[in-house]
Image 1 (cartoon, one colour):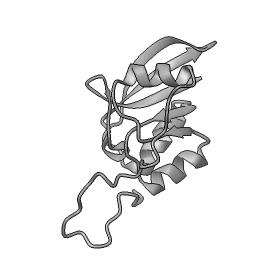
Image 2 (cartoon, rainbow, N blue to C red; image 1 turned 180 degrees about the horizontal axis):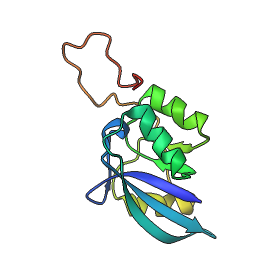
Image 3 (cartoon, helix red, strand yellow; image 1 turned 135 degrees about the horizontal axis):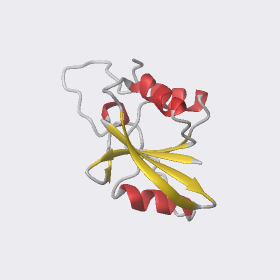
Length: 125
């Protein structure tokens, strides 16, 4: 199994569509056997989902995420845990022990879009 976390300075990065790096955890028998940092190459929301699928990711742990990205992840069969904050390694360990609590407010409503009438972070790229 492979788990990816939106990643910045050891923390879960809070906007899926703008993440520059994912920390990828290879897991066997419930234990992390390898980690690596994968660059997003500044791809857009839906292309990030494709990048995860190409890297054979089974689970994504992230902060905020928009609707189209959620749909793209579902299309690729990637399990999503959104609205997660804090230490990336702790989040993965919490997932592995069944203690990761998904926040109900995971859409990127933490952004303020002044002057962008009708804007939604869930727009597809």
